[in-house]
Image 1 (cartoon, one colour):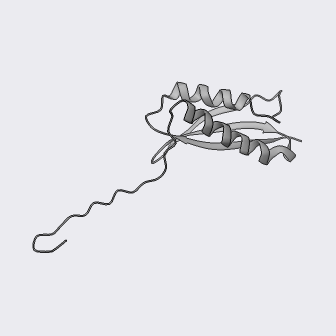
Image 2 (cartoon, rainbow, N blue to C red; image 1 turned 120 degrees about the vertical axis):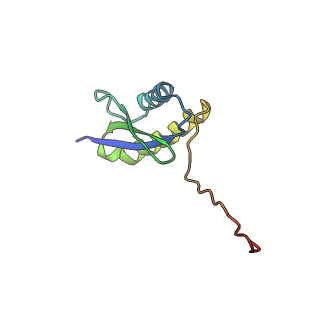
Image 3 (cartoon, rainbow, N blue to C red; image 1 turned 90 degrees about the vertical axis):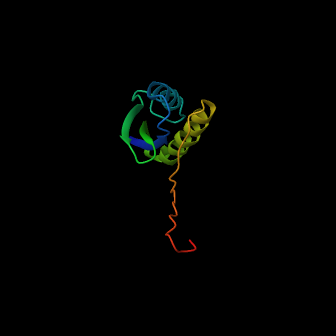
Length: 104
């Protein structure tokens, strides 16, 4: 009769942990169509290669799963942007080393 929506949100390593948790908690508490008697959860899920990963967990009816998931994503992005907390993306640095006697 109920389903938990888990959304992974990665933030910059520069982001304050307590501030990020507070922002994501406020977002989760205000998601429409969630089941009121099952409080949302915000869990530090991991330290990734380019981000600190948080799991935002909200309970809903199965029919509302995708609407709730999208709301979590949209509202989390807006709230993090409004608080100057960056959401990193994978990047690759390429270093070119020239060899003596070559044109490279």
